[in-house]
Length: 332
Image (cartoon, rainbow, N blue to C red; front, side):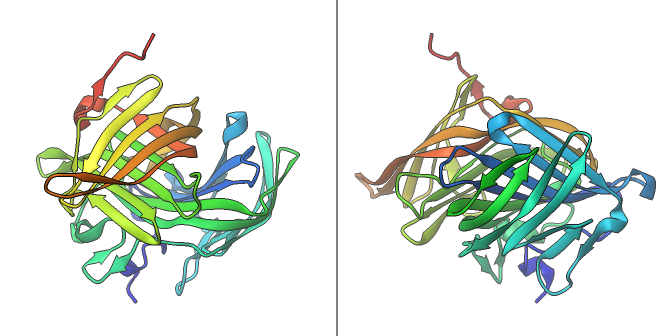
């Protein structure tokens, strides 16, 4: 099967100038006192001297991040399945193994994953990008590899042992030239009920000589994945953003989701600009997302689910006017 229908596999031609590719593994332990994001990837500049592979680690509860740099020669990938290595570090759908150390800190250990649930892949819609995956020269593409999965194993982070047995995980990825100039991203798979996961991204998408606001959101609920995206003709209300809150609504002809997220303190991460990891963004992994999910009819709306997602990832980046958002004053 061609890689376009395997979004977890490397998609960028190795060495392609001014391009990047990165995978995002989020893990939360069963006590919810520890949350890590581990981001392996490769960054290609205009020449080999500008290029490198990397592993970035976000220790969310301690508000620290570490960036471990490797040569491009230390990146390798299986040609048959998603299984990449960067130095002595391995990343696959069934788990990760880390051996990282430099002057900034150290991370080592192994985690195994089970029962991953990806965004559905179909012939004309190969993953989260849907038919946009076939559009050439898009600035950035996105994949959701696991809405939710089990985590087992342990990690030692800067000398601190973390038992991830019976934890929960989430996996996504991005590839292309660089991130959008403005976006709102959020994700949680820690609701009161198990088996529920929500992720959404609202971003300014360059297209031709202009740009449009792109929506990509998915809700896993009752063993189904509900898609709300630009290509499914879902609509989004004007997002309202303050220092401590993000709120909006997304709907299509059949369903409505009301989103009200509380923003928490963020930690700085590196991000791609022209393929190089020279940008900076703030990401939180201890925000919360209140959801209300409705089924719509011509005259009524039926509440199917209401709950709060904990340990939520949240990013608010760039000039939000580009995506039609408005800034509001926080209460008090």
